[in-house]
Length: 551
Image 1: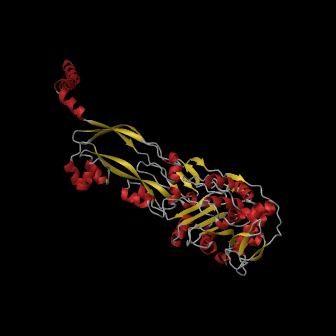
Image 2 (image 1 turned 90 degrees about the horizontal axis):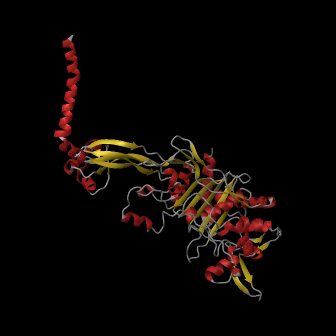
Image 3 (image 1 turned 120 degrees about the vertical axis):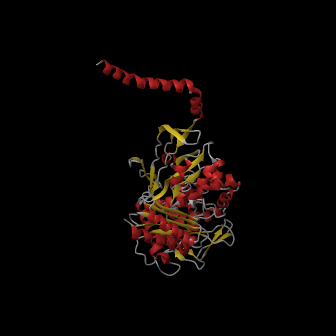
Protein backbone atom coordinates (compact mmCIF):
# COMPACT_ATOMS: atom_id res chain seq x y z
CA UNK A 1 0.00 0.00 0.00
CA UNK A 2 2.86 2.33 0.90
CA UNK A 3 4.50 1.57 -2.43
CA UNK A 4 1.27 2.41 -4.28
CA UNK A 5 1.09 5.76 -2.50
CA UNK A 6 4.66 6.56 -3.50
CA UNK A 7 3.90 5.74 -7.14
CA UNK A 8 0.79 7.94 -7.12
CA UNK A 9 2.73 10.74 -5.46
CA UNK A 10 5.47 10.54 -8.06
CA UNK A 11 2.96 10.52 -10.91
CA UNK A 12 1.41 13.72 -9.55
CA UNK A 13 4.57 15.60 -8.73
CA UNK A 14 7.01 14.66 -11.51
CA UNK A 15 5.07 16.36 -14.36
CA UNK A 16 4.70 19.44 -12.18
CA UNK A 17 8.44 19.47 -11.50
CA UNK A 18 9.12 19.10 -15.23
CA UNK A 19 6.81 22.03 -16.05
CA UNK A 20 8.41 24.06 -13.26
CA UNK A 21 11.85 23.34 -14.62
CA UNK A 22 10.76 24.23 -18.15
CA UNK A 23 9.25 27.45 -16.90
CA UNK A 24 12.52 28.27 -15.07
CA UNK A 25 14.47 27.69 -18.29
CA UNK A 26 12.10 29.75 -20.43
CA UNK A 27 11.52 32.61 -18.01
CA UNK A 28 14.91 32.87 -16.32
CA UNK A 29 17.63 31.23 -18.37
CA UNK A 30 16.20 31.91 -21.87
CA UNK A 31 14.23 35.03 -20.99
CA UNK A 32 16.23 37.44 -23.15
CA UNK A 33 16.19 35.32 -26.30
CA UNK A 34 12.41 34.78 -26.14
CA UNK A 35 11.77 38.42 -25.44
CA UNK A 36 13.80 39.30 -28.53
CA UNK A 37 11.64 36.90 -30.58
CA UNK A 38 8.36 38.31 -29.25
CA UNK A 39 9.60 41.86 -29.80
CA UNK A 40 10.57 40.93 -33.35
CA UNK A 41 6.98 40.05 -34.24
CA UNK A 42 5.41 42.88 -36.30
CA UNK A 43 1.75 43.67 -35.68
CA UNK A 44 -0.40 45.30 -38.34
CA UNK A 45 -3.89 46.74 -38.13
CA UNK A 46 -5.47 45.81 -41.44
CA UNK A 47 -8.71 47.30 -42.69
CA UNK A 48 -11.10 44.72 -44.10
CA UNK A 49 -12.89 46.27 -47.05
CA UNK A 50 -16.67 46.08 -47.14
CA UNK A 51 -18.26 44.95 -50.39
CA UNK A 52 -20.16 47.73 -52.11
CA UNK A 53 -23.84 47.07 -52.81
CA UNK A 54 -25.04 45.93 -56.21
CA UNK A 55 -26.92 48.12 -58.67
CA UNK A 56 -29.62 46.25 -60.58
CA UNK A 57 -32.26 47.04 -63.18
CA UNK A 58 -35.96 46.69 -62.40
CA UNK A 59 -35.92 43.24 -64.04
CA UNK A 60 -32.97 42.01 -61.96
CA UNK A 61 -29.99 42.47 -64.31
CA UNK A 62 -26.83 43.51 -62.42
CA UNK A 63 -25.24 46.63 -63.90
CA UNK A 64 -22.69 47.31 -61.14
CA UNK A 65 -21.29 44.78 -58.69
CA UNK A 66 -18.17 43.84 -56.71
CA UNK A 67 -15.84 40.96 -57.55
CA UNK A 68 -13.61 39.60 -54.76
CA UNK A 69 -9.87 39.23 -55.51
CA UNK A 70 -6.73 38.39 -53.55
CA UNK A 71 -4.15 41.14 -53.30
CA UNK A 72 -0.53 41.05 -52.08
CA UNK A 73 1.37 43.86 -50.36
CA UNK A 74 4.90 43.98 -48.98
CA UNK A 75 5.22 44.17 -45.18
CA UNK A 76 8.85 45.34 -45.09
CA UNK A 77 9.99 41.79 -44.26
CA UNK A 78 9.66 40.65 -47.84
CA UNK A 79 12.25 38.28 -49.28
CA UNK A 80 12.68 39.70 -52.83
CA UNK A 81 14.27 36.59 -54.29
CA UNK A 82 11.57 34.25 -53.02
CA UNK A 83 8.85 36.66 -54.17
CA UNK A 84 10.35 36.90 -57.65
CA UNK A 85 10.17 33.12 -58.01
CA UNK A 86 6.40 33.35 -57.47
CA UNK A 87 5.31 36.53 -59.29
CA UNK A 88 8.20 37.41 -61.60
CA UNK A 89 10.42 40.53 -61.69
CA UNK A 90 7.84 43.11 -62.88
CA UNK A 91 5.24 42.35 -60.24
CA UNK A 92 7.98 42.02 -57.60
CA UNK A 93 9.07 45.58 -58.45
CA UNK A 94 5.52 46.83 -57.88
CA UNK A 95 5.56 45.24 -54.43
CA UNK A 96 8.92 46.84 -53.64
CA UNK A 97 7.47 50.21 -54.66
CA UNK A 98 4.63 49.75 -52.18
CA UNK A 99 1.92 48.88 -54.71
CA UNK A 100 -0.64 46.12 -54.40
CA UNK A 101 -0.85 43.34 -56.95
CA UNK A 102 -3.68 40.91 -57.65
CA UNK A 103 -2.63 37.28 -57.14
CA UNK A 104 -4.11 33.83 -57.60
CA UNK A 105 -4.99 31.48 -54.75
CA UNK A 106 -1.92 29.35 -55.50
CA UNK A 107 0.37 32.41 -55.55
CA UNK A 108 -1.13 33.65 -52.28
CA UNK A 109 -0.27 30.42 -50.45
CA UNK A 110 3.39 30.68 -51.51
CA UNK A 111 3.67 34.41 -50.91
CA UNK A 112 2.44 34.21 -47.32
CA UNK A 113 5.78 32.62 -46.40
CA UNK A 114 7.87 35.34 -48.02
CA UNK A 115 7.02 38.48 -46.03
CA UNK A 116 4.03 39.43 -48.17
CA UNK A 117 0.67 40.23 -46.64
CA UNK A 118 -2.30 38.67 -48.44
CA UNK A 119 -5.76 40.14 -48.11
CA UNK A 120 -9.08 40.08 -49.90
CA UNK A 121 -10.24 43.09 -51.86
CA UNK A 122 -13.19 44.04 -54.04
CA UNK A 123 -13.01 45.29 -57.62
CA UNK A 124 -16.01 47.19 -59.01
CA UNK A 125 -17.37 45.85 -62.28
CA UNK A 126 -19.82 47.44 -64.72
CA UNK A 127 -21.95 45.96 -67.49
CA UNK A 128 -21.78 49.18 -69.58
CA UNK A 129 -25.56 49.44 -69.47
CA UNK A 130 -26.76 53.01 -68.75
CA UNK A 131 -23.28 54.31 -67.83
CA UNK A 132 -24.46 57.91 -67.37
CA UNK A 133 -27.16 56.73 -64.96
CA UNK A 134 -24.98 54.29 -63.04
CA UNK A 135 -21.85 56.48 -62.90
CA UNK A 136 -18.54 55.23 -61.52
CA UNK A 137 -16.34 55.19 -58.41
CA UNK A 138 -12.77 56.41 -57.85
CA UNK A 139 -9.80 54.37 -56.62
CA UNK A 140 -10.94 55.00 -53.03
CA UNK A 141 -14.27 53.38 -53.96
CA UNK A 142 -16.26 56.57 -53.48
CA UNK A 143 -19.13 57.31 -55.85
CA UNK A 144 -18.11 60.01 -58.31
CA UNK A 145 -21.03 60.19 -60.77
CA UNK A 146 -24.53 58.83 -61.40
CA UNK A 147 -26.34 56.80 -58.76
CA UNK A 148 -22.94 55.63 -57.50
CA UNK A 149 -22.56 59.19 -56.21
CA UNK A 150 -26.22 60.00 -55.50
CA UNK A 151 -26.69 56.94 -53.26
CA UNK A 152 -23.09 56.46 -52.16
CA UNK A 153 -23.96 56.39 -48.45
CA UNK A 154 -26.31 53.42 -49.02
CA UNK A 155 -23.98 51.52 -51.36
CA UNK A 156 -20.75 51.94 -49.43
CA UNK A 157 -21.12 49.62 -46.41
CA UNK A 158 -18.91 49.65 -43.28
CA UNK A 159 -15.32 48.41 -43.33
CA UNK A 160 -14.04 45.92 -40.75
CA UNK A 161 -10.55 45.41 -39.31
CA UNK A 162 -8.19 42.79 -37.87
CA UNK A 163 -4.79 42.67 -36.12
CA UNK A 164 -2.13 40.58 -37.87
CA UNK A 165 1.27 39.51 -36.49
CA UNK A 166 4.13 38.67 -38.84
CA UNK A 167 7.08 36.50 -37.75
CA UNK A 168 10.71 37.51 -38.43
CA UNK A 169 10.77 35.05 -41.34
CA UNK A 170 7.86 36.92 -42.95
CA UNK A 171 5.23 34.31 -42.22
CA UNK A 172 1.81 35.39 -40.98
CA UNK A 173 1.93 34.37 -37.31
CA UNK A 174 -1.60 35.09 -36.25
CA UNK A 175 -4.82 37.03 -36.83
CA UNK A 176 -6.89 38.27 -33.92
CA UNK A 177 -9.36 40.93 -32.74
CA UNK A 178 -11.30 40.72 -35.99
CA UNK A 179 -14.36 42.93 -36.67
CA UNK A 180 -16.26 41.74 -39.73
CA UNK A 181 -17.20 44.27 -42.44
CA UNK A 182 -20.84 45.07 -43.17
CA UNK A 183 -21.75 44.94 -46.85
CA UNK A 184 -23.46 47.90 -48.53
CA UNK A 185 -27.09 47.95 -49.57
CA UNK A 186 -28.34 47.03 -53.03
CA UNK A 187 -30.00 49.52 -55.38
CA UNK A 188 -32.81 48.44 -57.67
CA UNK A 189 -33.37 51.03 -60.38
CA UNK A 190 -36.41 51.83 -62.51
CA UNK A 191 -34.26 51.19 -65.60
CA UNK A 192 -35.55 48.33 -67.75
CA UNK A 193 -32.57 46.36 -69.07
CA UNK A 194 -34.18 45.46 -72.42
CA UNK A 195 -35.41 48.98 -73.23
CA UNK A 196 -32.14 50.54 -72.03
CA UNK A 197 -30.03 48.19 -74.13
CA UNK A 198 -32.23 48.84 -77.16
CA UNK A 199 -32.23 52.66 -76.98
CA UNK A 200 -28.51 52.74 -76.19
CA UNK A 201 -27.72 50.76 -79.35
CA UNK A 202 -30.30 52.66 -81.39
CA UNK A 203 -28.78 56.00 -80.43
CA UNK A 204 -25.22 54.83 -81.04
CA UNK A 205 -26.09 53.38 -84.44
CA UNK A 206 -27.68 56.69 -85.45
CA UNK A 207 -24.17 58.23 -85.32
CA UNK A 208 -25.64 61.37 -83.78
CA UNK A 209 -24.70 63.04 -80.54
CA UNK A 210 -27.79 63.29 -78.38
CA UNK A 211 -30.07 61.56 -75.93
CA UNK A 212 -33.09 59.28 -75.69
CA UNK A 213 -35.20 59.13 -72.53
CA UNK A 214 -38.03 56.67 -71.96
CA UNK A 215 -40.25 57.35 -68.96
CA UNK A 216 -43.31 55.69 -67.46
CA UNK A 217 -46.14 58.15 -66.87
CA UNK A 218 -45.61 57.89 -63.09
CA UNK A 219 -42.14 59.45 -63.45
CA UNK A 220 -40.06 56.25 -63.46
CA UNK A 221 -37.18 56.46 -65.94
CA UNK A 222 -37.17 53.21 -67.92
CA UNK A 223 -34.19 54.15 -70.08
CA UNK A 224 -31.78 57.06 -70.37
CA UNK A 225 -29.10 57.01 -73.04
CA UNK A 226 -26.60 59.71 -73.89
CA UNK A 227 -24.28 59.47 -76.89
CA UNK A 228 -21.32 59.33 -76.91
CA UNK A 229 -20.99 57.29 -73.74
CA UNK A 230 -18.03 55.84 -71.83
CA UNK A 231 -16.83 52.68 -70.08
CA UNK A 232 -17.15 53.06 -66.27
CA UNK A 233 -14.62 50.22 -65.81
CA UNK A 234 -11.88 52.67 -66.87
CA UNK A 235 -12.28 54.51 -63.56
CA UNK A 236 -12.00 51.51 -61.25
CA UNK A 237 -8.19 51.45 -61.24
CA UNK A 238 -5.89 54.44 -61.20
CA UNK A 239 -6.14 56.11 -64.60
CA UNK A 240 -2.91 57.49 -66.02
CA UNK A 241 -2.69 61.10 -67.20
CA UNK A 242 -2.85 60.15 -70.87
CA UNK A 243 -6.09 58.21 -70.42
CA UNK A 244 -7.66 61.00 -68.36
CA UNK A 245 -6.68 63.68 -70.88
CA UNK A 246 -8.05 61.56 -73.69
CA UNK A 247 -11.49 61.25 -72.11
CA UNK A 248 -11.76 64.64 -70.38
CA UNK A 249 -10.54 66.65 -73.38
CA UNK A 250 -12.61 64.75 -75.92
CA UNK A 251 -14.55 67.47 -77.83
CA UNK A 252 -17.62 65.22 -77.89
CA UNK A 253 -17.72 65.19 -74.05
CA UNK A 254 -18.54 61.49 -73.48
CA UNK A 255 -18.82 62.02 -69.69
CA UNK A 256 -21.61 64.57 -70.17
CA UNK A 257 -25.09 63.22 -69.53
CA UNK A 258 -26.92 65.16 -72.22
CA UNK A 259 -30.30 64.13 -70.82
CA UNK A 260 -29.88 66.28 -67.69
CA UNK A 261 -26.70 68.37 -68.04
CA UNK A 262 -26.86 69.91 -71.53
CA UNK A 263 -29.21 72.66 -72.71
CA UNK A 264 -30.59 73.24 -76.19
CA UNK A 265 -33.09 75.53 -77.92
CA UNK A 266 -36.28 73.43 -77.85
CA UNK A 267 -37.72 74.63 -81.13
CA UNK A 268 -41.30 73.62 -81.82
CA UNK A 269 -41.63 71.12 -78.96
CA UNK A 270 -42.42 74.16 -76.80
CA UNK A 271 -45.37 75.27 -78.95
CA UNK A 272 -47.91 73.27 -76.86
CA UNK A 273 -47.06 75.62 -73.96
CA UNK A 274 -48.37 78.62 -75.90
CA UNK A 275 -51.37 76.62 -77.07
CA UNK A 276 -52.19 75.92 -73.42
CA UNK A 277 -51.84 79.61 -72.55
CA UNK A 278 -54.11 80.52 -75.47
CA UNK A 279 -56.74 77.95 -74.48
CA UNK A 280 -56.65 78.76 -70.75
CA UNK A 281 -56.98 82.47 -71.46
CA UNK A 282 -60.18 81.73 -73.42
CA UNK A 283 -59.02 83.37 -76.63
CA UNK A 284 -60.85 82.93 -79.93
CA UNK A 285 -60.43 79.35 -81.20
CA UNK A 286 -61.89 80.24 -84.55
CA UNK A 287 -59.08 82.68 -85.25
CA UNK A 288 -56.97 81.83 -88.27
CA UNK A 289 -53.76 83.15 -89.77
CA UNK A 290 -53.02 83.09 -93.47
CA UNK A 291 -49.53 81.57 -93.63
CA UNK A 292 -47.73 82.59 -96.84
CA UNK A 293 -44.42 81.12 -95.73
CA UNK A 294 -43.25 84.27 -93.95
CA UNK A 295 -44.38 86.81 -91.37
CA UNK A 296 -43.73 90.54 -91.58
CA UNK A 297 -43.61 92.44 -88.33
CA UNK A 298 -44.95 95.91 -88.87
CA UNK A 299 -44.08 98.67 -86.41
CA UNK A 300 -46.26 101.55 -85.22
CA UNK A 301 -44.93 103.61 -88.09
CA UNK A 302 -46.40 101.15 -90.57
CA UNK A 303 -42.97 100.04 -91.75
CA UNK A 304 -41.88 96.40 -91.88
CA UNK A 305 -39.32 96.04 -89.08
CA UNK A 306 -38.56 92.37 -89.57
CA UNK A 307 -39.40 89.37 -91.74
CA UNK A 308 -39.59 85.92 -90.13
CA UNK A 309 -39.72 82.77 -92.22
CA UNK A 310 -41.79 79.65 -91.85
CA UNK A 311 -40.06 76.28 -92.19
CA UNK A 312 -42.42 75.53 -95.11
CA UNK A 313 -41.53 78.22 -97.65
CA UNK A 314 -44.70 77.78 -99.73
CA UNK A 315 -46.83 78.53 -96.68
CA UNK A 316 -49.58 76.57 -94.92
CA UNK A 317 -52.48 78.76 -96.02
CA UNK A 318 -55.35 79.45 -93.63
CA UNK A 319 -54.30 77.98 -90.29
CA UNK A 320 -56.08 77.72 -86.94
CA UNK A 321 -54.54 76.59 -83.64
CA UNK A 322 -55.15 72.86 -84.16
CA UNK A 323 -53.65 72.90 -87.63
CA UNK A 324 -50.78 75.08 -86.38
CA UNK A 325 -49.84 72.38 -83.86
CA UNK A 326 -50.29 69.60 -86.41
CA UNK A 327 -48.15 71.15 -89.15
CA UNK A 328 -45.98 73.19 -86.74
CA UNK A 329 -46.77 76.45 -88.50
CA UNK A 330 -44.24 79.05 -87.40
CA UNK A 331 -46.22 81.98 -88.80
CA UNK A 332 -49.21 81.15 -86.59
CA UNK A 333 -47.01 81.02 -83.49
CA UNK A 334 -45.22 84.27 -84.39
CA UNK A 335 -48.64 85.93 -84.26
CA UNK A 336 -49.69 83.99 -81.16
CA UNK A 337 -46.54 85.03 -79.28
CA UNK A 338 -47.21 88.71 -79.98
CA UNK A 339 -50.84 88.30 -78.91
CA UNK A 340 -49.90 86.59 -75.63
CA UNK A 341 -46.87 88.77 -74.89
CA UNK A 342 -43.67 87.60 -73.23
CA UNK A 343 -44.99 88.14 -69.68
CA UNK A 344 -47.90 85.74 -70.25
CA UNK A 345 -45.59 83.25 -71.96
CA UNK A 346 -43.20 83.43 -69.01
CA UNK A 347 -46.09 83.07 -66.57
CA UNK A 348 -47.14 79.76 -68.11
CA UNK A 349 -43.52 78.61 -68.38
CA UNK A 350 -43.29 79.17 -64.62
CA UNK A 351 -46.53 77.25 -63.99
CA UNK A 352 -44.92 74.22 -65.67
CA UNK A 353 -41.59 74.88 -63.90
CA UNK A 354 -40.09 74.75 -67.36
CA UNK A 355 -36.64 76.12 -66.60
CA UNK A 356 -36.27 74.77 -63.07
CA UNK A 357 -34.54 71.67 -61.77
CA UNK A 358 -36.78 68.63 -62.14
CA UNK A 359 -35.30 67.01 -59.02
CA UNK A 360 -34.30 63.82 -60.82
CA UNK A 361 -32.16 61.74 -58.45
CA UNK A 362 -28.95 62.08 -60.44
CA UNK A 363 -26.08 64.50 -59.75
CA UNK A 364 -25.17 67.18 -62.26
CA UNK A 365 -28.63 68.32 -63.37
CA UNK A 366 -28.57 71.77 -64.98
CA UNK A 367 -31.30 74.36 -65.18
CA UNK A 368 -32.44 75.69 -68.51
CA UNK A 369 -33.53 79.22 -69.33
CA UNK A 370 -36.85 80.74 -70.27
CA UNK A 371 -36.04 84.46 -70.62
CA UNK A 372 -38.04 87.59 -69.93
CA UNK A 373 -37.31 91.35 -70.16
CA UNK A 374 -35.83 91.61 -66.64
CA UNK A 375 -33.44 88.73 -67.37
CA UNK A 376 -32.23 90.34 -70.60
CA UNK A 377 -31.78 93.70 -68.89
CA UNK A 378 -29.82 92.09 -66.05
CA UNK A 379 -27.60 89.91 -68.24
CA UNK A 380 -27.14 92.02 -71.39
CA UNK A 381 -28.17 95.46 -70.20
CA UNK A 382 -30.46 95.65 -73.23
CA UNK A 383 -34.20 96.19 -73.69
CA UNK A 384 -36.56 93.43 -74.74
CA UNK A 385 -37.59 93.74 -78.37
CA UNK A 386 -40.72 92.41 -80.13
CA UNK A 387 -38.40 90.25 -82.22
CA UNK A 388 -37.33 88.47 -79.02
CA UNK A 389 -40.96 87.61 -78.30
CA UNK A 390 -41.56 86.49 -81.88
CA UNK A 391 -38.62 84.08 -81.80
CA UNK A 392 -39.57 82.78 -78.35
CA UNK A 393 -42.88 81.80 -79.98
CA UNK A 394 -41.10 79.05 -81.94
CA UNK A 395 -38.72 77.95 -79.14
CA UNK A 396 -35.74 80.00 -80.29
CA UNK A 397 -34.33 83.37 -79.13
CA UNK A 398 -32.69 82.91 -75.71
CA UNK A 399 -34.70 79.81 -74.69
CA UNK A 400 -32.52 76.86 -73.72
CA UNK A 401 -33.81 73.77 -71.92
CA UNK A 402 -32.45 70.41 -70.86
CA UNK A 403 -34.08 67.35 -72.45
CA UNK A 404 -35.38 66.24 -69.04
CA UNK A 405 -37.07 69.62 -68.54
CA UNK A 406 -38.85 69.13 -71.87
CA UNK A 407 -39.74 65.57 -70.82
CA UNK A 408 -41.19 66.92 -67.57
CA UNK A 409 -43.41 69.30 -69.52
CA UNK A 410 -44.77 66.46 -71.66
CA UNK A 411 -45.26 64.32 -68.55
CA UNK A 412 -47.62 67.05 -67.34
CA UNK A 413 -49.44 67.09 -70.69
CA UNK A 414 -49.77 63.29 -70.66
CA UNK A 415 -51.11 63.36 -67.08
CA UNK A 416 -53.66 66.18 -67.67
CA UNK A 417 -51.66 68.86 -65.85
CA UNK A 418 -49.97 66.76 -63.14
CA UNK A 419 -46.22 66.25 -63.51
CA UNK A 420 -44.70 63.27 -61.70
CA UNK A 421 -41.13 63.73 -60.57
CA UNK A 422 -38.60 61.84 -62.72
CA UNK A 423 -36.55 59.28 -60.82
CA UNK A 424 -34.25 56.31 -61.39
CA UNK A 425 -34.44 54.72 -57.91
CA UNK A 426 -37.06 52.08 -57.31
CA UNK A 427 -35.91 50.31 -54.16
CA UNK A 428 -32.99 49.95 -51.73
CA UNK A 429 -32.60 46.61 -49.96
CA UNK A 430 -30.07 45.23 -47.49
CA UNK A 431 -28.14 42.01 -48.05
CA UNK A 432 -31.02 40.01 -46.58
CA UNK A 433 -33.41 41.44 -49.15
CA UNK A 434 -35.27 43.63 -46.65
CA UNK A 435 -36.54 47.00 -47.90
CA UNK A 436 -34.60 50.00 -46.65
CA UNK A 437 -36.04 52.67 -48.96
CA UNK A 438 -38.89 52.46 -51.46
CA UNK A 439 -39.46 55.34 -53.86
CA UNK A 440 -42.95 56.71 -53.57
CA UNK A 441 -44.69 58.28 -56.55
CA UNK A 442 -44.43 62.04 -56.16
CA UNK A 443 -46.13 64.89 -58.03
CA UNK A 444 -43.69 67.74 -58.74
CA UNK A 445 -46.51 70.13 -59.56
CA UNK A 446 -50.11 70.32 -60.71
CA UNK A 447 -51.50 72.85 -63.18
CA UNK A 448 -55.33 72.94 -63.01
CA UNK A 449 -56.10 72.80 -66.73
CA UNK A 450 -59.60 72.89 -68.17
CA UNK A 451 -60.90 69.60 -69.57
CA UNK A 452 -61.43 71.36 -72.88
CA UNK A 453 -57.76 72.41 -72.94
CA UNK A 454 -56.57 68.87 -72.26
CA UNK A 455 -58.86 67.32 -74.87
CA UNK A 456 -57.98 69.88 -77.54
CA UNK A 457 -54.25 69.56 -76.89
CA UNK A 458 -54.18 65.76 -76.95
CA UNK A 459 -56.30 65.62 -80.11
CA UNK A 460 -53.95 68.10 -81.80
CA UNK A 461 -50.81 66.21 -80.78
CA UNK A 462 -52.37 62.99 -82.00
CA UNK A 463 -52.88 64.61 -85.39
CA UNK A 464 -49.15 65.43 -85.50
CA UNK A 465 -48.56 61.69 -85.70
CA UNK A 466 -51.66 60.40 -87.49
CA UNK A 467 -52.95 63.09 -89.88
CA UNK A 468 -51.97 62.76 -93.53
CA UNK A 469 -52.69 64.95 -96.53
CA UNK A 470 -50.72 67.26 -98.76
CA UNK A 471 -47.47 68.74 -97.48
CA UNK A 472 -49.12 71.89 -96.10
CA UNK A 473 -51.72 69.87 -94.12
CA UNK A 474 -49.89 66.71 -93.02
CA UNK A 475 -48.78 66.11 -89.44
CA UNK A 476 -45.03 66.70 -89.11
CA UNK A 477 -44.47 63.19 -87.70
CA UNK A 478 -46.91 61.38 -89.99
CA UNK A 479 -44.30 60.03 -92.42
CA UNK A 480 -42.19 58.69 -89.54
CA UNK A 481 -45.14 56.97 -87.83
CA UNK A 482 -47.15 55.94 -90.90
CA UNK A 483 -48.57 52.42 -90.54
CA UNK A 484 -47.81 52.18 -86.80
CA UNK A 485 -50.59 50.39 -84.95
CA UNK A 486 -49.95 52.25 -81.70
CA UNK A 487 -51.91 55.18 -80.33
CA UNK A 488 -49.33 58.02 -80.05
CA UNK A 489 -49.54 61.78 -79.52
CA UNK A 490 -46.42 63.90 -79.87
CA UNK A 491 -44.60 66.92 -81.19
CA UNK A 492 -41.62 67.37 -83.46
CA UNK A 493 -39.08 70.13 -83.04
CA UNK A 494 -36.44 71.59 -85.34
CA UNK A 495 -34.22 74.04 -83.48
CA UNK A 496 -31.60 76.21 -85.14
CA UNK A 497 -28.22 76.24 -83.42
CA UNK A 498 -27.49 79.86 -84.27
CA UNK A 499 -24.36 78.99 -86.24
CA UNK A 500 -24.22 79.55 -89.97
CA UNK A 501 -24.23 76.35 -92.01
CA UNK A 502 -24.99 74.01 -89.09
CA UNK A 503 -27.89 71.62 -89.25
CA UNK A 504 -30.69 72.10 -86.73
CA UNK A 505 -31.15 70.07 -83.57
CA UNK A 506 -33.83 67.42 -84.04
CA UNK A 507 -36.53 66.76 -81.39
CA UNK A 508 -39.48 64.46 -80.91
CA UNK A 509 -41.47 63.97 -77.70
CA UNK A 510 -44.56 61.81 -77.49
CA UNK A 511 -46.67 59.57 -75.28
CA UNK A 512 -48.87 56.49 -75.61
CA UNK A 513 -51.72 55.57 -75.26
CA UNK A 514 -53.12 59.06 -75.76
CA UNK A 515 -56.05 58.94 -73.29
CA UNK A 516 -54.37 56.95 -70.51
CA UNK A 517 -50.63 57.30 -71.13
CA UNK A 518 -48.24 54.63 -69.91
CA UNK A 519 -45.03 55.76 -71.56
CA UNK A 520 -43.34 58.98 -72.72
CA UNK A 521 -40.46 58.97 -75.23
CA UNK A 522 -38.07 61.84 -75.88
CA UNK A 523 -35.45 61.88 -78.64
CA UNK A 524 -33.04 64.79 -79.10
CA UNK A 525 -30.31 64.60 -81.75
CA UNK A 526 -27.74 67.35 -82.11
CA UNK A 527 -27.35 68.85 -85.59
CA UNK A 528 -29.40 66.08 -87.20
CA UNK A 529 -31.90 68.19 -89.17
CA UNK A 530 -35.69 68.19 -89.06
CA UNK A 531 -37.50 66.64 -86.13
CA UNK A 532 -39.81 64.69 -88.41
CA UNK A 533 -36.91 63.31 -90.46
CA UNK A 534 -34.35 62.40 -87.77
CA UNK A 535 -35.76 62.22 -84.22
CA UNK A 536 -39.28 60.98 -84.98
CA UNK A 537 -38.19 57.77 -86.81
CA UNK A 538 -36.07 56.78 -83.79
CA UNK A 539 -38.97 57.51 -81.45
CA UNK A 540 -41.22 55.29 -83.56
CA UNK A 541 -38.77 52.40 -83.15
CA UNK A 542 -38.75 52.90 -79.37
CA UNK A 543 -42.57 52.85 -79.22
CA UNK A 544 -42.62 49.68 -81.35
CA UNK A 545 -40.02 47.99 -79.15
CA UNK A 546 -41.94 48.95 -76.02
CA UNK A 547 -45.21 47.62 -77.42
CA UNK A 548 -43.64 44.35 -78.52
CA UNK A 549 -41.94 43.80 -75.15
CA UNK A 550 -44.39 45.29 -72.65
CA UNK A 551 -45.40 43.03 -69.80
